[in-house]
Length: 137
Image 1: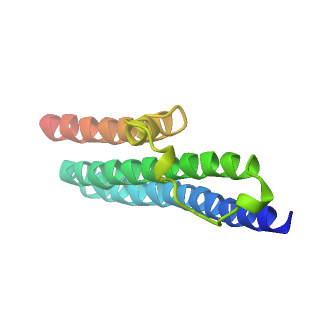
Image 2: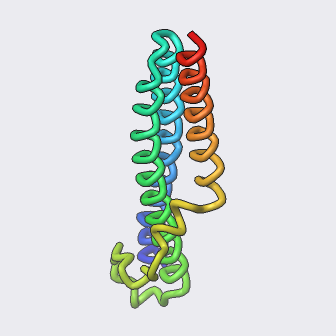
């Protein structure tokens, strides 16, 4: 049984790293957007708000990539869990678990979509507020 446990441990470590990366990415997204929007409102420059949207979308796609990879490793984990001890080969290959469209599904998952859409909505509100403020002034 030690081979199977070691292999499952290796896979779980990868899953944990992917989950941590996703968590830190969300944190950096919030910090970055808050800083850029702070400059946008301080200097009354709507272009800054637009600049916050570009990395937000990039972080969203990257977060979707991490989520998709995590799902693939969870499938690998389940397969290894059901594999006989003498058939354990310590493979970390997730290619057999890929299906068409999984990456896009991860980007628009119920966990990522509300988070990143909310941030983009806030960026849009600040941008609109800045544009209305410029027209009025």
